Length: 136
Image (cartoon, rainbow, N blue to C red; front, side, top):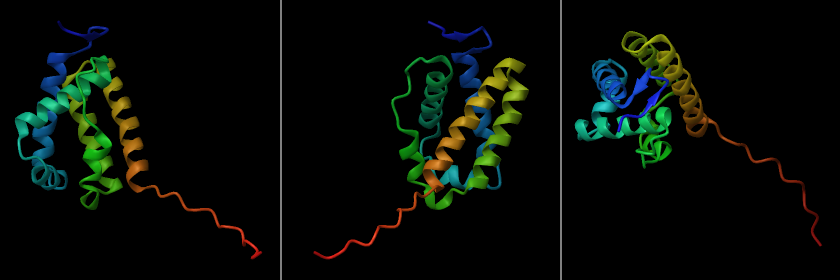
C-alpha cells in the first residue's frame, strides 16, 4: 500500500530523499563527523529515518522511536548553528528532489521539528526566586 499526500509525497519518494540527503550529511564538513560517529549501521538508520518522515508527512505510524532522546545522547556535540546547517542542506535537497509543494511542506515540517528540538536541548528554564520564608 502506498500512502500519499496529494500525490506529491509518497513512501518511495521519501526513501529516495532521505537516502540522498543523508549521503550529503555524511560528506558535510561539520555535520558528517557527528553523524558518522553516532551512526553505526547506516542502512538501519536510513530505514528508521524513512519511517520517521513517513510518520510525520504521511501519518503512517511507522516510526516508533523518540527523536528527543536520540538527540539528547549527542547533546555535547550539537549546537544550535548545526540545526541551521542541517536545515539549509535539507532545503537544498528537498528543492532539488521534490515538487515545489512537497518541498515546501517538508521544509516547513523540518523547521518546526528543529525549533522544538533546539528548545528542548538548549533552552533552560530558570527557577523563579524563592520568597524568604520566615522561621516559625
